[in-house]
Structure formats: structure tokens, C-alpha cells
Image (cartoon, rainbow, N blue to C red; front, side, top):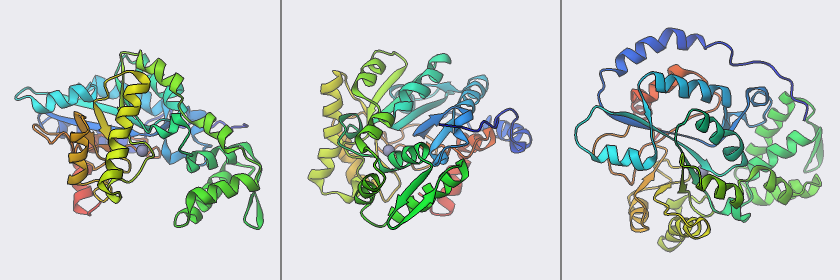
Length: 340
Ligand SMILES: [Zn+2]
């Protein structure tokens, strides 16, 4: 891969310099609260800029800066176990944060956990078991990798040049949009055939493996949770299928890794993706908590099976924006415009 390196993170965005002091002052008056953050993938700064689907990744340099900022600002980074305990306990003046990385990409193992390890901070990894099992092809990751490896791709009936970072990004957006409403897995399979791409080989390149998870299991800073078997939208399933996804992922992880899997995260996680029935299924499956991706803060005595969690968009690399999650402002704004 020929990545054109352009430094992107040497200085703070202007918004950080102007907004940050105000946000921090306002936040100091808000009292005890927890905030759960989640993201999927991460990449070093020098390649982040060139990635076809870069909004899906955190810039590792930003993550490093964020962790330093949060710990210096008095936030404690904790496991989900500890977040639940604090939410349930009375009193205190805690301000705590949990970071979770969803799905199970190879970079969780190779890039993300090492950053947390360096800071001696815990991180939760929510695994979709079909990924290390190799039963769930991830078309977006596969398409992205194929675009990175090629300078030309064949689509139904036409060939397009993808010989620069910009053309790869444009191609990713166009192809992903054209696959959205159709049979996405079928479109991806046809794309691989047309372009002589080995989908299984790609999978091995972007997926976390059971061997990597065995290493993470031994790391006292890593907490492993479940994220279904096939990354299904749970609310759309029958009760039996929903149970198979939720409980099935817990059982697979417990058995394969010989661990107690105490926490669950709903795929997609918005209000249309998981509801009260599904929160109950998570409880009955033996989990101690289940997280959504509804924006907001964890308050005292929060229902642990419908936890709010704030997704970090990789394109938003500003500490001020992170403060808007920590003050609850982003959750408030999301509710105002009905994005829940
Ligand atoms: Zn997910």
C-alpha cells in the first residue's frame, strides 16, 4: 500500500481551544455521572487519512490524546463491570467512563488494545462471534480492503480507476450506497468474483481470531463481552431467533474462551434496533448489562439492560465534541431532534 502521509493531528482544532474551557467548567457542576463510549476500528494517523471508510475508524493519535485529556481532567476509565457497580451504588461523586470496541476487527488486537495498555487503562471488547468463527463476512471491511489493494475495480458492466486515496473513498461511498437496499451479501460476493478477490483471505486480514482473543483474555485490562452471533438487528427477529443471537454469543464466547461473559452490546443499538423485549432477553440470558447506542449519560440506578452509549465518529476528532458527550449535551440534542 502506498499511503501518502499528511500529518493531521499536530495541533488541536480551533473548536477545542475556544469551547473546551467552557465545556469543562460547565461539566464540573453536573455531579456524578458515567459515560460509555464506543467505536469499531482504529488506524495510525498516517494511514487514517487514506482509508476509504475512514469515518468508521478512530485516529490512534486522537485516541491517545483523548485518553491523556480524560485522565488529566479527573475522569476515571473503568470496565463495564465497574461502571455497573458505580451506577447501582448510592452516593459518591464519581465521574467514570467506559470505552468499548465493537464487532471484533484485527486492529482491535493490533492497534487499540496496545494504546489502552500503554495508558494502563481498561477497555471492553464486544465480540460478534461469527467474526472469529469466519461465518460472518463483513462486506464493508472486505470492500475497503479490496479497494486499498487495487488500482482498478470492476463493477457490473464497468471498470473504475481507484488509484488515489480520493478515488478509493469516492468508490467506497458509491458502491456501499448502491449495495444498501439490495442483497448486500450477494452484491459483495459478486464483486469478489468479478475482481478475483478471495473473500476468505480478506476476512483473515480484517477479522480478529480466536487466538488473538485468547491472548486478550489473559490481559487484566481487557474485558470481553458479547455482541451477538451474526450482528443481527435484534428487534427485527422472532423471540427464538433473538435468544439464539443474544444467548448464543454468550455461550460461544464462554465455551471457546472459558470465561464468564457478563456484558452485552446490541448491534446498531438505536431505539428501532432493540427494545424492552430485547433488554429482557439480555437479562434472561445471564448478562449483567446490555448497552445500546442511544446517546446519553449513565445515571444512578440506571436500568443496566438499556445503557446509553455514545458512538465516536472517526471524522470528529475534537476534544470539545467529546466534552459534549460528557456533559450530556449530545444526548439532549439527539432527543430534541428525535435521533434516538
Ligand atoms: Zn457492531
